Length: 166
Image (cartoon, rainbow, N blue to C red; front, top):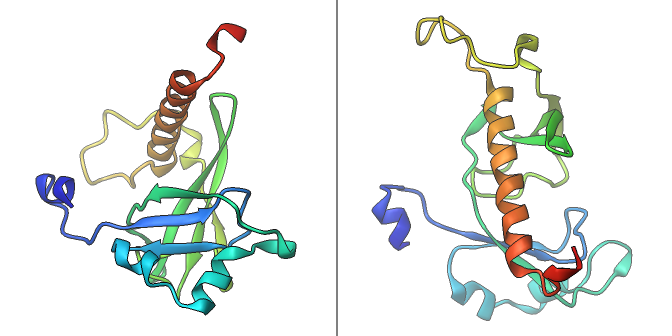
């Protein structure tokens, strides 16, 4: 909450708690206040305890929530980018008309829209006047994906219990 205030973010901060062994869209909950976890009722606990094929949840991941501000035809949409090695190779928007900007869109009712390769240009047009060309979102998402990949690799390197093996 402190950082939200510092950066002038008006939305309510949240985290996403999800099963560590894969979710298939199950075993996921959005938490805006720690009391929500403490005060889970039996139905909510049961929903978080088991994922697809009855697999028991023994560990969870807590991720900082990121508000989704993209929309396609008045439905909330989030970009998903595919990478091979360090190369962005494709992507799509996950779209859900019945979910909000702070909810999991990977749920029944979601549909998918291809993320265009932005007119096959690798870089934005630096000569174009601002506002005259549609934003190259594929390029922007690709930059963010590569930065996330770099951050993840640094985190893995710093937390590796056996760095001498590599």
